[in-house]
Length: 244
Image 1: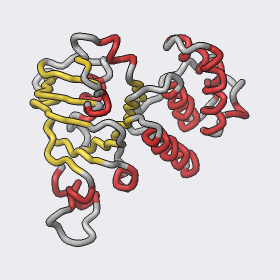
Image 2 (image 1 turned 180 degrees about the vertical axis):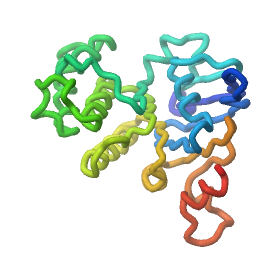
Image 3 (image 1 turned 120 degrees about the horizontal axis):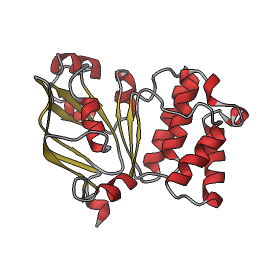
């Protein structure tokens, strides 16, 4: 039965900040087993939406369900199913990547016998194996982003939420991250991401939602969004038309 449930279902989500409407009755549904790109201009409500889904902010109105679980009624169960990776990596700089992953795995109650080989695989996959015992305080922003991604994946969440995951990454690291996201979906997971790199969204996302002024203005696969438009229409063309 769970396979038929959407990974995320949002109904009537509203949020206001001191005279500014952040979300205006947002309705959004993300099918399970896909990469979903949530796009929009700065201030459109993307990060606000994802922070509320992750339990880091409260909505003024509306409902959210993760795989059928009401986030408001059962927040602990909901949070156990997801991982959140913000655009600014949050690490304990005095820890090494290996120590950080062991710590995060402990918070999720992942047994050490499971966490250790999983952490080793993630560190190797992200090109961090040779730096596994070096304190994170000296890492570049891109390296910290990779450590944070490994931490988000250590408990194998059903839903992975990423806010600008490719920021600060070089081409090789960005390719590795994109491959990992595709592998997550191939293994049955679901990924929701925001990105200003529209070519990435066009290439890897199964479905794309475009948000403007706190409302969803378009949603579908790239083929569905481009239907009825000129041949060769790109996601950038659609974005500039719909999100302006």
